[in-house]
Amino acid sequence: MIKRRIALAAGVAALLVGCGTTATPATSGDTTIRVQVSGEPGETAGYSAIAKAYEQSHPGTKVQLVPVAEKSDHLTRLSTAFAGGNPPDVFLINYREYAQFAARGAIEPIGPRLAGLGVDTADYYEQPISAFTYDGQVQCMPQNLSSLVVYYNRTLFAKAGVQAPKPGWTFEQFKEAAIRLTGDGVHGLGMDPSIVRLAPFVWSNGGDIVDDPQHPTRLTLDTPAARQTLESLVQLVRDEGAGPDRTELAGQDLEARFASGKLAMYLGSRRDTPALREVQNLDWDVAALPVTRKPAGVLHSDAYCVARKSKHHDEAARFIAYATGKDGQQITSMSGRVVPSLREVANSSAFLDPVKKPANSQAFLDGLPHLKSLPVLATWPEIEDIAGEELARAFHDGAPLDDVIKRIDERTRPLFASSDSTR
Image (cartoon, rainbow, N blue to C red; front, top):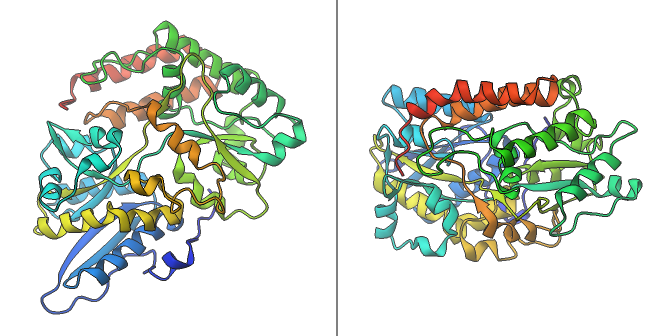
């Protein structure tokens, strides 16, 4: 992966407290809360800044930030900490992954506590609030949301004589561009063969990923619209050679290939922005996803949760109210990492800064009306892992698509049956 470095605006940089486990030394009578987040330094710098700013404005509470570079390690450490009875007071997690903790009562619902502090969820975008509502309560408070976008290399587009993507461009135009941009050591398209990347294309074609979004019992990749979408993408990436093969990816992953000018288009969320801002002489921007029948996007959102076993529920809630409020979200917006969940900040210059890449940050906001979320259930991370493993066989190993779809259904259906999908 690209070496991620801390790169924040001067106003944010002054607040940084580092990227290891960080805390201002506590004095007698101080309360210390542990906050665990995931991401490499370029991503977690904003959270360090929030922790420092909160300590300065809330004397008596110290924030011990625990950054974990890899998401898989973050989730493993959370599971181990909960099992051992010593979880962090606050942890940041994606909506597709928090249900495993909510289902066993490990999360203290944050909604009532934030309401008591005067936080009005109506000031936030509805999609992430809904995604973090489980068993009728807002469990965790979203600090961001993002749509999937197309990161594209402006230099490679110009060199190939391909017009830059415009809002509303079609799936056929997207495919044609990917093919024309492929050649001379460059691939036109980089996309992970994962459910979260494929879902918006399926939805745009009028299909669905599961049989019931609220209480799913199976994946529906075998339905006509979904299968047609998968077939088109497999043909584009594998048969047309528009995407790098498994051998090429083993040597350099998609993000690194895009950063080095070997990939013309790359599908990603706002999370990729901080690292790309640090790449010298890379002329890039973002565009909306192509449209087949109707615009569609997939929600990306992380939220702060409070561990039920924390001894500092009130202090944790006050920290979350700050981190997801105007001041906190302005800090993380300046880092480039997030699309703010608070409407006021999302539509401000803190996020829509015309000087910083991407120039077209508005594309993230334009896609919000079309966002859909993936299911929230305890076993969803395992379902995604299996689907990704099998889909990679179709995209990279030449496995027949129908065989892959059948294998996905056989391996994941028991996980739906065993999961608690209460919303």
